[in-house]
Image (cartoon, rainbow, N blue to C red; front, side, top):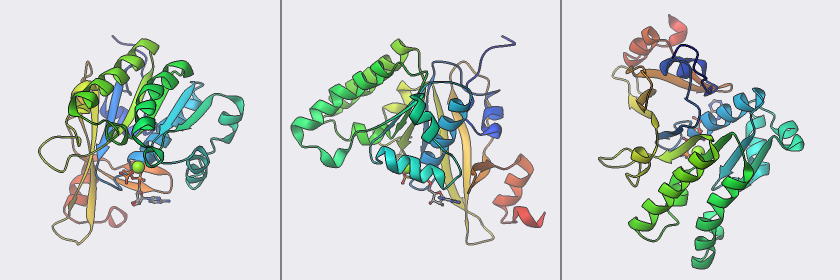
Length: 245
Ligand SMILES: Nc1ncnc2c1ncn2[C@@H]1O[C@H](COP(=O)(O)OP(=O)(O)OP(=O)(O)O)[C@@H](O)[C@H]1O
Ligand SMILES: [Mg+2]
């Protein structure tokens, strides 16, 4: 299909890696270790889609709406006008506020809140923290499936952060990677020639899309994620600084 609609990630080089962006109605994971830039990528995605006129719901498991707005301003991203106009809603469900009863409540109310938002774009930071609220593996799997079906029923496109697995799987619980349509994997390794680590991004899976199989170096900058060109990526891996090229 030549002119199929795509949903931008807000990072042009990442859109390119997947042939133009996400397909509408996909649920895509951004997974990686702490500090990889998952939250920053989600904020970038949210702003880009607000700018394109889409209704967005931002669901956080840790930051209050005020904190989300404040942290975004550090990057020059102003969500305030979109909140004021109602085009953006930010909701927080905090794990630390929960006792057993309330946890159950959140598991039930969160999908309902998402459904009732009627948003085009849903952003969740992070699915892992909500999965942490489930008492058993079966509950966790059920909740994750319910989230997927909620998004599908609404026709929303979703970008969802997930904590990386410390072991063999991709995410902590090994569920979200199969339930989602796509996986953007952030990782890092230490350069052989310098003591600095290098951030690396790859599109690990993207259903129905012919996507790049490249590993590309990226930096987290004051303007968000900056993915380097493949040539810079090779040099970065060898420890050469982009600026010195
Ligand atoms: N203004 C900035 N300029 C450049 N880099 C920044 C700036 N602010 C944060 N960073 C980088 O971004 C990292 C944090 O990114 P982010 O919060 O998106 O990570 P995360 O993957 O969501 O982590 P976690 O899993 O802990 O939530 C910091 O460790 C820092 O390296
Ligand atoms: Mg984060």
